[in-house]
Image 1 (cartoon, one colour):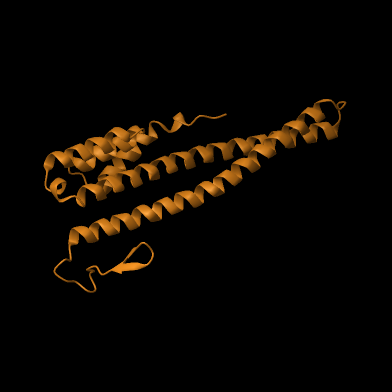
Image 2 (cartoon, rainbow, N blue to C red; image 1 turned 45 degrees about the vertical axis):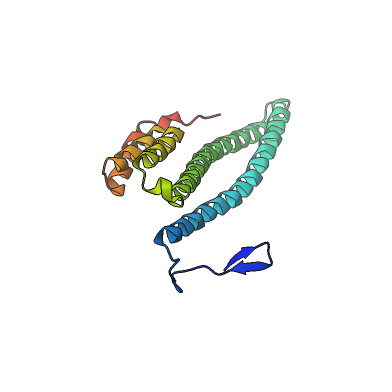
Length: 187
């Protein structure tokens, strides 16, 4: 049943109760929308956790810098060296965490791209006059390709469109990404 105005329901055909209105296209659109909703929910939950971690790390950086500044004012001693060495260890760990956040940001970008692509695909499949038009499919593919910001992802997309298997496209993407691993910016 599809809810309308939270009060009325309209019966609809489903795989468990098919009628003459049942459509594999509509079922495909529904499944695409489920995937979109799951990805969006995961991204929202992930963003909340990352925001909490980001705030915590920002506070830790500030506190560590205060400790380091205070330690620098101390006279030379074993205690001063211990404090500064531990500050440096904390700073190094924070640097590693920042790199991890950058990887999370890349993950979030990719998932956002996937949800947008799935939504565009769902819209195309759900529109009969577009569904059977090859130019609409070409336009969708060009739109999706134009949104890629990571070259390895673009290469993977092109490989699949050119007939590669998922495994082959992933291997190509990994090869391309290995050449750009050093592109992660360190603060």
